[in-house]
Amino acid sequence: MSLQGLSHQARDAKSWPFEQARLLLDRILRLRLSDAERDAAATLIAAGKAADAVKTFAALNKPVVFQCGFGASGLPHMGTFGEAARPTMVRNAFRALTEDQIPTKLIVFSDDMDGLRKIPDNVPNREMLEEDRDKPVSRVRDPFGEYESFAHHNNARLRAFLDGFGFDYDFMSSTDCYSSGRFDGVLMRFLERFDAIQAIMLPTLGEERRATYSPFLPISPKTGRVLQVPTLERHLDRGTIVFADEDGTLTEVPVTGGHVKLQWRPDWAARWTALEVDFEASGKDLIDSVRVSDKLTKVLGGVPPQAFHFELFMDENNQKISKSKGNGLTMEEWLRYGAPESLAYYMYQSPKSAKRLYFDVIPKATDEYLQQLDAFNRLRAETNAPALDNPAWHVHRGTPPDKGSPVSFSLLLNLVSAADASTKDILWGFISRYIPDASAETQPLLDRLSDYAINYYEDFVKPSKTFRLPDDRERAAMQDLIARFKALPAGADAEAIQNEVFEAGKVAGFEPLRLWFTALYEVLLGQSQGPRFGSFAAIFGLERTIALIERALAGDFVAA
Image (cartoon, rainbow, N blue to C red; front, side):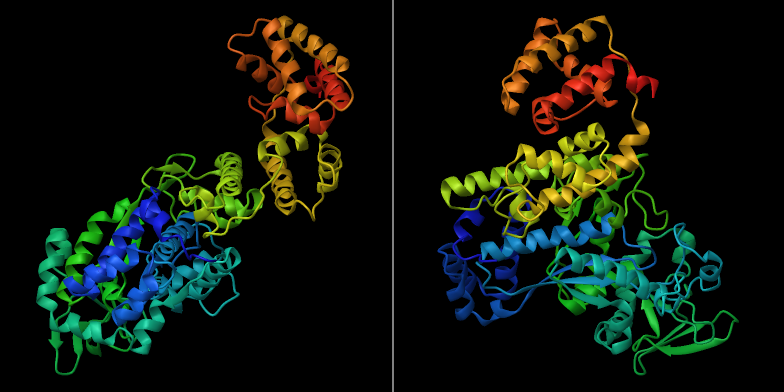
């Protein structure tokens, strides 16, 4: 992806990733440079000379770190994907703003050393997991029997999806960071500044929890469980703490080397400090936790990252998506019915607004993505410049394809329905007559959409179809439409067909006219919504469309 020459556009772009990118650049210049250096670097970058700024100020050669976290105690879900997709969009905007001269990286951090507190509902062998309850997830046996631990299984599923979508990221494991010594320095600071940490944490807790709270969660040498117990003694000279093990035995362990795990808000602060994180996005339900972790980070001598808060995804019952409940959509489910691009588009849309994340959002998201891609390519053809505020630029990380699909997803769904298509070959038989020289090779996106449409139709549309007979006015209008279609010349295009559909509805007195189209969809297709009817008839074929109307008027579909 070439990002040269985009800095001027990026400075004026209105989309939320660019707003965040500009804030982040200001943060980087403020933290790494003196006031005079900052002004000089900002002037160079604003003039499109980011390379000169980086050469002049060595501090700008240090990577800007984006981070997102993954709770490895449950299977990856759609919210997990969003936590990687949104920082990636800000990262790409930042790269355009700085013409890719300041290095960046995205850390995907798996919190796989947490104790398994809840047994997920959507996994097998739950009895086995119950036996391993409270052990670090990286030591819990894999209920699927495929990996060395439950965490390794969940981490592999997450990475496979991110890799399949082409994310550029560095994967990090909490277990590795604690055990390898990477977090040793910050853990010793926790021990040294224990009282200051407690002064921040205790007011955030209930009375009962305050009495036993410690930022350190020791791992029992006897049972391997992560214990929520008080710290009875601290020995800074030895780098150890003393606690009562599960059998009551006073036990001393180092805070380093993977013998303890930090509570989650202290852990967040430790991560930000040790990894020098510059940007992190999180759900709005964590705003208070971010504020607490910010304070802890400052006590540790670190600088809190720039925070971006997004709204939560809800399932079909308006409940928060939860990895332990397994509600809502999985990533695999979305990719059975919709393109990865449509998923990224859905993540891009209005991150500050709550959105339902269920099967019925996929067709709409797909068609909106296709519309945005077409708009991007039209403007690029007219101006020879990319539209940085178009969602397609963010979905494709700056390199949208040159063409989308000549057929919408909703139209494909209705072709599948009308033709009773069980394979793509049946669909391509119609499409190739409507679009000369169209094939799976020349229209790869359309070919993929055909697979998704067949899957979606079979699983969701077909079982819920409800045909009805037309009333007298609708019957007369449809008979008039048949006559109009028969009068059209051979090879009439979609626009000519659509005009006749409009005229038939107007002559019949439908007001508003959408009631006429609703009647067509309900009588002919067994659903209340559908595609532009002229386009449908043009691809399906006028003769077949006439036959479809005649069968509906005869009551064939209702009888079936």
